[in-house]
Image (cartoon, rainbow, N blue to C red; front, side, top):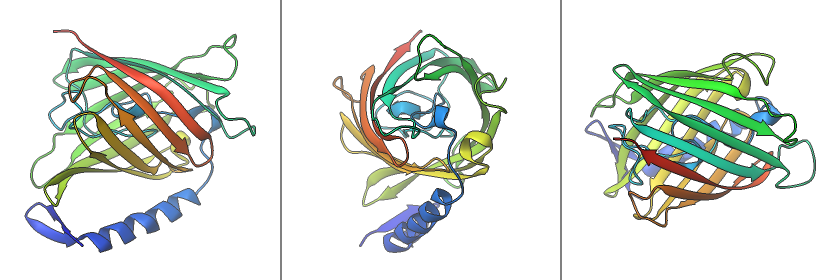
Length: 253
């Protein structure tokens, strides 16, 4: 099998895959993600909206389902999404709606703010305030690193969920691969989370990983190509079940 090039060093692909499998087993056994936050993340990369290392929303970048990546969009991007799935509390799929709206409000420092509305009862709408701050941009030798919080004012859960996340682009047989590793509080079960994503073509990406309490995977389709404004996501969360939805991006210049 091939090798991974990272910072000028080569790592054999089998060793990396074994490491990811071990990490997946560990994180999946460390608790159960709070039911309201089991579908998608309202933070950068969440819901399959891809972000490049330099902060552009672009299909050639990294994306995830239910964890934040460190790449943080530049000021001027506005993202919104709506998704249906389960929440793990019933045996029914697609009975839980999650919506979010967010955007970057500053380039220096790079700051992204968003609100999340996760509910099974639309007459009991509650919004969770979220945010992410980019600390370090990616270089050839270091990953991008960001800190953030989900449900900052604990309007939905009993406490906020702070986190730190790192994302690095590597090369496998000349293909871009993005790895994310982080650690978070309440929503993340006070444990590690990780993810891997790959741009397959200008129209398709795949992503998968663990949010600390469940594994997940998804296929993302952008009809408009690498610069497309609309991203359709279809996937599965290990506890919450099947997931589907759409994300929309607007660039305000």
